[in-house]
Image 1: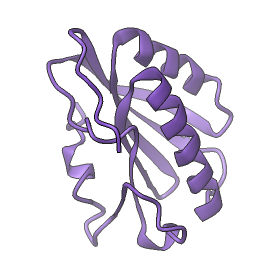
Image 2 (image 1 turned 60 degrees about the horizontal axis):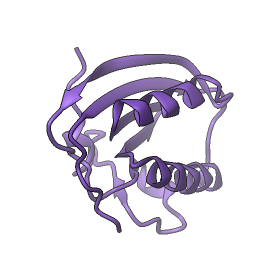
Image 3 (image 1 turned 120 degrees about the vertical axis):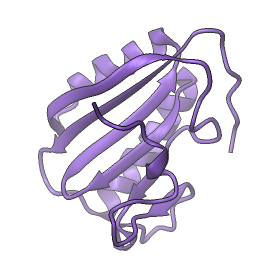
Length: 135
């Protein structure tokens, strides 16, 4: 796991979206691997929560990196009803050790993905509780 240095200007953005089709273990494994690769290249850290067909993602990075990823997400056919819940400047990262931590149902972790945090009976994980509260 790489820890990312904190540049002087950082933003955090949280968005939600609905998956256009149900996703299984292989789909989520591929999404996570691609996201980790792209986020590491952009210097983005964050957390992805997938539950009941809904994504909640928190991304942290420079404003330019956040905007670049956001523009890509807006074109991604796997998402619909995509909404920004929060976007604001930050002074430090909450997910500095993860290019993308991931929380979902335990049964969706058949590949024992690193950075996977299973949801409990309340629909939370040790990492999802760090997501900023929605307005």
